[in-house]
Amino acid sequence: MIGIALLGAGRIGTVHAGNIAASPRARLAAVVDADPEVARRLAERHGAPAMTLEDALAEPSIACVLVTSPTETHAALVEAAARAGKAIFCEKPVDLARERVARCLATAAEAGVPLLVGFNRRYDPHFAALKQAIDAGRIGRVELVAITSRDPAPPPLAYLKGSGGLFRDMTIHDFDMARWLLPEEPAEVFAAASVLVGPEIGAIGDVDTALVTLRTRSGALCQISNSRRAVYGYDQRIEAFGEKGMLQVGNVARTTVVHADADGVVGETPLPFFLERYAEAYRLELEHFLDVVEGRAAPRTTGADGLKALVLADAAHESARTGRSVAV
Image (cartoon, rainbow, N blue to C red; front, side, top):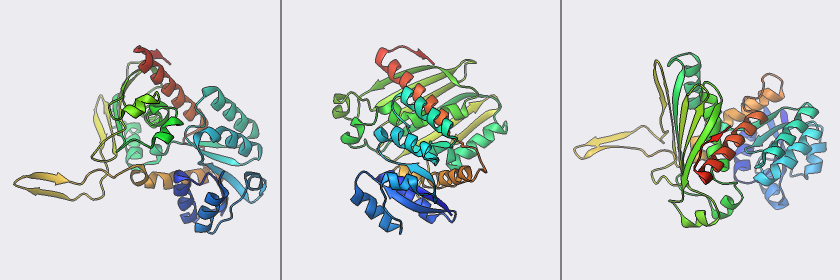
């Protein structure tokens, strides 16, 4: 059983704690949080101890850490875990500043520990099947990718204030998917963004609606459509088009039941949010990380992937601000 310390006992930390407790290969060996009472409650739920960071990193039976705390704490925790010789999983982003991310990656490399970044969508069975079909040549060389990613409603304003903005918080997942599916790295970014959902979002300097176009050196394109409001549910779709055809992944609903009568045809709305839509992806992501810890696999979503996605997010932010395309 691989001993894991969970660093951060908030919403996403709670998801990971449940997956660790349910895995036959792992045990939740420590829960750490800035609020000791929050750590204690989550730890007790799974029969684990709450610890200080120092005690968790000094515990020899703990092989790895999951960094699931607020974004502004990620970099320091990654570096502390690396220096303690622990394998590291870090939720995205490692940091909002590229220079700080680069230093974290260097620290992990110097310590010789693996660093996996939480781009969970690569582990989703639907998107993974699409990627496998692309790699098998089903549609030939990919020429155009269309990614739709829309939240059902905006997060709380307090969260948005520390999120780094739409491109670094939300679109960053789509940038990683674009890099994964396109035949080569994006070389140019053009973004247009608006405040259409809530004026309070614009008041803090953020946007809530955006279209981003990525172009590779060979001319392959990706279009990303984002909104902080989709009244019908969590809208997650991908279309990949190539010389031999097209591949699509549609939304996932709670059931596939469709009601048809003389008035029309009605089906279920998409699953309500990311916790439901990507529940299996989070589980499979953990199992892959355990493979990495055991030396049976290399990280599928590396620190370098996190840095490259952040570069694209920064370019999109600059493009939306200036109205000009930005070379990457």
